[in-house]
Every structure is written in structure tokens, then in C-alpha cells.
Image (tube, rainbow, N blue to C red; front, side, top):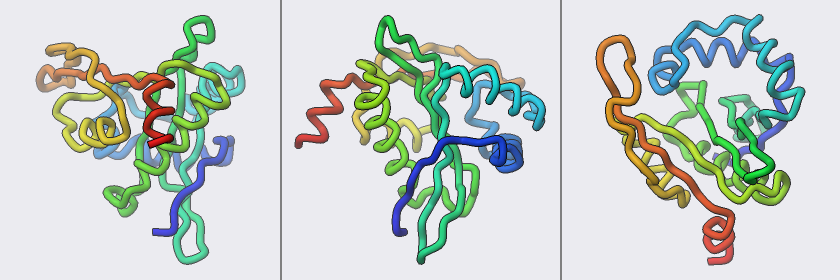
Amino acid sequence: MDGIRIRPITKEDTADIVRWRNTPAVQNNLFSRETLTPQHHLQWLQTKVDTGLCHQFIIVARQDGREMPIGTIFIKNIDQSSHKGEFGIFIGEAAARGKGYGTLAIEKILQYAFDVLTLNRVYLSVFADNAGAVHLYEKIGFAKEGLLREEFFDGTGYRDVWLMGILKKEWDTRRAG
């Protein structure tokens, strides 16, 4: 693994986003379960990304001099009056999962959130049974802030959801350490 970069999402990424988002492995860990169409994605770009309500990027893996888009990462629901935003990520390419790309991408988006967007708090919601993601977020510095018991019905049963967050001062301390 040579590393990653994140670049702003474009309309040209629609086919990848739709393909990734509609795979069972990705969909199982999302709160929105409907099938994503190219039209829905383009509407998202127009109403959320183009308006600045969501800062979304494509995660590009670099290996052996080649680059390949592998997923997406974003800060959405940005509230400038309270200086906070909601974080989300998914690695869409199955072969890229579990290789550390997510960790690198999260570090980049947090740096962007705190230094460029000047947020004070970045938060997320994650299914409590997604142990790998919860562990990763804790490793990065997110703290568990609350458990919403049986918060989400996935069609077969109820799932608990962790609310997690990280503050700018906590991020700054981690970077300085």
C-alpha cells in the first residue's frame, strides 16, 4: 500500500458510487436502504454537494504508481452556527477493505473538517454490531457519546446505534502527540 488521496467528487464518479452503494456489503451498514439510481445520485450532487451542505470526496488508492477509486468519504449536515458536521465513509471496492485505506482517509477528512471547514465537532452514527468500524473510529479518536437502543429496523430486526464524536481540541492533541 502506497497510500491514498481524496479528491472532490464529480458527476463522472456516478457509476462507481451507484455500483458501490448498491452492493450488499455496503448497504448493510448504511441507514438508507433503498437502491441508489444514477438520477438519485446526481440529485444528491446538485442539492447537497454543489450547495456546500455536504463536502464529499472520492478515496483514491495509490499502489505501484497506479491510482484507483475505492470509495467515498464526506462531511454532511454541516452546521456553521454550531461548528459541527456529520462524518460518513464507505470503501466500495471489496478488494480494498481491511488494508488501512479507511484509516488514512478518515485522518485526511478530519484534518479538512477542522482546518478548512473550521468545525469544532465531527460526529457519526454507526451500527453497534459493526465492531470493525466502531474499533476503527475509537482508534482514530472518536468517543462513544451514547447508545440508541433498537434505533433502526433493518427489515428483519432492530439494531442498536452508537453516536460517536471527536472535538477539534482532541484531534489537535492527537496530531501533536
